[in-house]
Every structure is written in structure tokens, then in C-alpha cells.
Image 1 (spheres, rainbow, N blue to C red):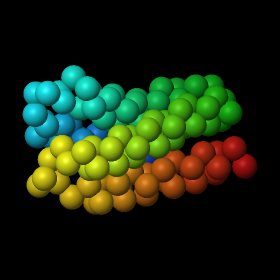
Image 2 (image 1 turned 180 degrees about the vertical axis):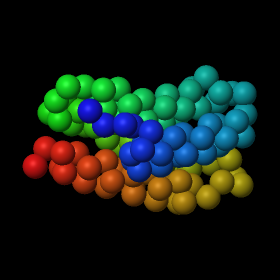
Image 3 (image 1 turned 90 degrees about the vertical axis):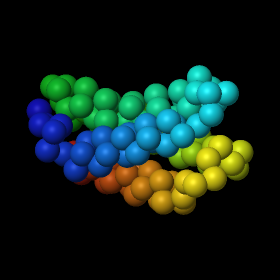
Image 4 (image 1 turned 180 degrees about the horizontal axis):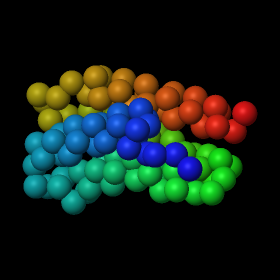
Length: 117
């Protein structure tokens, strides 16, 4: 069993979730229950699945939850790209957020590989 609070992937994903939350607060009310909600749910899913998986008895089970977390990270990246292309907020540097998501994807994949090897 892993202490999720000490995992770099969990710490980084919580920080990313916080940034996504602040981003979605900038969206107009027209988007508050559409893409804004989707962005936030995908972001929250990443650290949540890492935490849930860390409590599993086997590394194989944990790896399954990491896979779900990774899928949510790819979902989040896609939604950020869409938000950027739709110009939902002009004062946001989406490239920075997208790069952070991509770095987190690599971290999750590497950690998953390390526990299943």
C-alpha cells in the first residue's frame, strides 16, 4: 500500500486541479455547466483515482486506477485544447496548462510502469 499524500503524481495532480478550478471560474456563466464542469471533473478524477488506487491490495489493482487517472489526464488535455480553440478566456496561457498535463501524463505512466515491472 502506498501513501498517496507522498506521491509526486498525486501532489502535482492536486495542484493542477486547483489551477483548472481557477481557470473555470473565469469562464462566463454560459460555459459554467458545460465545458467548465467537464474540465473540473476530469481534473478532480486524476488525483482521486491515484488516491483510491493507492489503497488497493495489489500493485496490479493500483496500476488499474493509475490507468484511469491517465485516461482522465488525456481527457483534461483534450478539453483544454477545445477551451483554447474556443477562446473561452483570453488571459489564459493554455500552453502552460497543457504542458503541465502532458508532464503529469508522463509521470503517471512512468510510475505505473515502475510498480508493475
